[in-house]
Length: 337
Image (tube, rainbow, N blue to C red; front, side):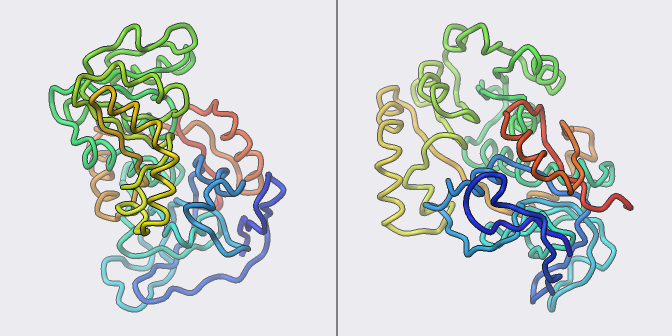
């Protein structure tokens, strides 16, 4: 089968389309014929070796973190799915493998696709959708009447986060360029600040929480928009000690490293009487099923920016790296379905 194989860390040349053996499902796993796979910033960061401190893979390895497809065969003990089921999943972080014609996924990481979506849109949901859901519902505990700031709302995670926050009853402010403003307004944003012409801290104050999707200077500046006791969850800033324990299941060594790299951010949070948390989402078939229910109830739209053929995976990755995508970028692996 064809797969995008990472043979060494580096630039686009480090990953190549290669013939590899088709895997066989083990106990608790499904073999899925992949129809489409979603691209995410973690893919090119991992390819470049930026994630080695957190997770060091044994190379070569098939890349890819999320997919949609059709169940081809079942491993021992799988009872919740049948051959022929249309499914989507965020694959195991330690294994990856979504950028291939066939991939293994754990049963508890998998859910049936929303009936209202095609395979391309379904492949765009798992990683970004789960990240937004777990950050807002579980970490920030967003509730009706709260005011939430989501910088970078027109990207892959942001398009889900705005809608989930509105579903939870929050008032949502976000930032976008003029090109992304119409999109985030359609998704429900109450206030949109054009970051190319205006600094958000001049317009926002007293917010209960922020979901940071940008990091860098944006994270450094957003503390002033929060009320005392405000909370920040980030997927773009420095990881902090709880990340090592809660999200990665790691020990004191990594927690200590994260303590140092996040020190200035945590001190800034403390000076503003706020809390800071970095989130690595976790795969969850149950959470995917919940997202599917929202999608089929027309309460959550999936925004796909572009679909590339699998043969153009390198071009698709380069496009994602430009940061211009509004919504998700998807690879089409099986054009016959």
